[in-house]
Amino acid sequence: MGNAPLIALSGLLALAGLLSGCAIHQSIGKSTGAFLHPVSGHDFVHIPNSDWDRQNHALLYFYRPHSQWAADEIESPSVYVDGHHYFNFRNDSYTWLVVAPGPRHIIMRRPLLGLEGINDLDLSRIADAKLDAGAGEIYYLRYSEVEPPARAHPDLNPEHALASGDLQLVTREFAMTGEQELASTQFLNSDLLAPNHAAVAIVEANQDYDYERRLEELEAAREAEIESMKDKGMYEAAPWYWPFGGGPTQPLETDRQIRALESSYAALEAEREAAKAAQDDGHWWWPF
Image (cartoon, rainbow, N blue to C red):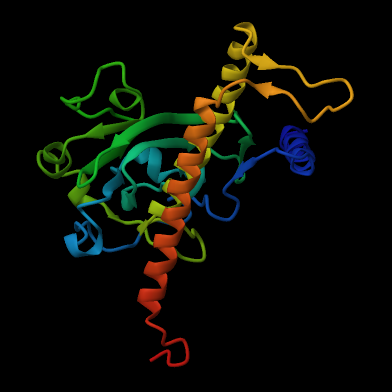
C-alpha cells in the first residue's frame, strides 16, 4: 500500500512521456542526497577571471550552507536554469555557472525517487525566480531551507522572488564575511553517485532559450496584430476559389521583427561556427 502513490505517479509520468509536447522533469540517478553521499570536493575558491568572459557574460555562484536538515537528506533538490537541469544541490556545497546577460529563469524542484513533475505541474517547486544578469556581474545565490540570510540584498525589491524563500540572492560581502558561509563550503563535484553538469559556461543554451522565447512572443503578437488589422478593415479575406490568397493590406510590423530576430540569430550561429573553427585551428588530423 505504501508504494501505491509512487507506482501511480510513475505510471502517469510514463504515460505523459508518450504524449506529444509533454516534458517530464526528472533527475533520476543524479538526486543522491548528502546522507548517502557527502560532498567531498575542494574548499571554495573563486574561479579565475581568465576562465570566463567578464566583458560579455555573467557569473552565478550557488551555495548551500551546512545544516543538519540538509545533511540528513536522502535526495537533494534539483536546479534548472532556462529550462535545463544542471545539478542537484547537496549539503555544504557550492558550484557555478557562466551565463549570458538577460533574465535567467531559475527553478528548483524537490524530486521523489528522481521524478519531479510534468510540464508546469511539479511535485514540489521550491524556487521559481528570474535573475536579470548583467554582463561582467557576479551573483551569489544562497539556498537554505532552515535559516534565511541575516541581511536582505540591498538592491532587490522586497517583492522579488529572490528576496525571500529558500533561494535568495545575497551580496558578496554577506557570502564571504561574517559566518563565512560560502568560504566553508566544498565544490559540488560530479561523480558516478551524483553526476551533474554545472561548473561550465551555459551561454549558448541561454542564447537559444532567449531566441525561442522571443520568437514565441512575436508569433503571438503577430496573431494579435492580424486581428487588429481585421477590426480596422485592413485585411482582405481569401476568395472562395483560392484559399491561399488574402491577407493584410500592409506589411506587418511583427513580420519585420521576426525577420530581424531570425537574421540576428543566424549571425550568432555563424559566429559560433567561426569560433569553433578557430579553436580547432584546422588540426583535426593531429590531436596533440
